[in-house]
Length: 368
Image (cartoon, rainbow, N blue to C red; front, top):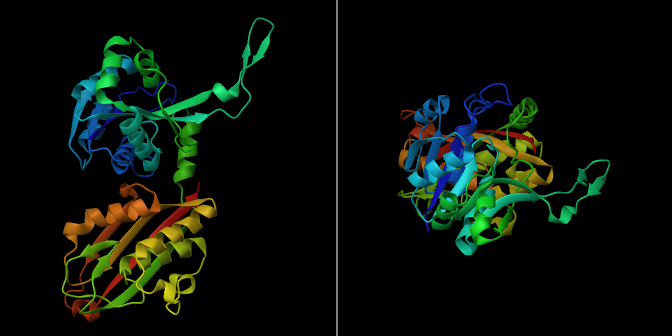
C-alpha cells in the first residue's frame, strides 16, 4: 500500500511575524525538514501544497521521490482537499510543514496504523489539569479524555477523500474523518513534534538545532581477499574486503568514534575490544545502534554526521544514497542530516595503492 505525503506549506505565518516556513533554520527550511521526515518515515510520493514564497522554496528542493505541487486554498480545509485531489496511492499522510521536527518513527507509526486500522493520528495525552471557566464558575475537565492533536494524520486515501468531500470545514483532519468513520486510531506523538507558531517556538527551534558538542573519528583497515566489503552498513560488490575483528566497516567505525568523542565516552576499541570474542565478525550496524542508545540514555541525540571515505576503488557514488539512509535509520535521524562523501589520493599512499580504505567523520550531538 503506497503512502503519499501531503505537505501543507501554504500558511501565512501571521502569528510568527515573519515567514516561518521559508526562512532557513540552521541551513534548512521547515519545509525541507518536514519533507525529509516524511520520506524517511515511509512516504513513497509527496504533494506540496503551496502559496507565494513556499512555491519558490519547493521549486529549489531536491526531492528524491515522485512529487507534485498544487496551490493552497483560503482555509486549511481547502488546502488539504487540493492536496488529496492531486495525491496517488492508498494511504494519505497529511502533515503541517510547520511541524518540522516530527520524527520519522512517528510518521512510520501513523502509516502502519492506517494500513491496519484505516487511520493513524499523532496525538499526545494531556497531562496538566485543564479547567473550563464559566460565568463565575470553574469546571475541571477529565484529562483522561483529552488529547493534544498533532500531525501527521494518516488515513486510507478513499475514506479521507470522502470525508473532505462531505464533511464541511475543520481545522483538524481527524474531526472530519470521525463524522463518517468514527473515532480514529491514535499513535503516540512527541513533545519534539512542536508546531512553529510564535516567536518563542522559533527560539526553541534554534536552541534545539544548536549542537552541544562535536566529535572527530578516524579509522583505517587493510583490504584483503576472502572478505566481504561493508561500508556504512551496506555490502559493496568488490573483489576484496576489509580485515578486522568485526565486519571491519571502516566508515561506521569512524562515525562511532566521532559520536563517542562528542560524548566523551572513549572509543570503540575501549567499548568493543577486539579481545572479546562476542564481537568477532559482528555487524557494525549493531554496534552503531548500541552507541546511539548510550547517547539517548544521557538525554542527548545525534544531530548531524559528516563523513568521508578515502579509497581508490571501489567507486561509491552508486551506493551513497543507500549508505546515508542506512546510517540515518540506525541513528533515528533524517537522511538529510547525514552526509557521506568519497575521495581518492590519486594513487598516493596506501589508500591510493589499494592496500586499505580509510574514513574520517565529524559528529554533532545536542540535548533532546
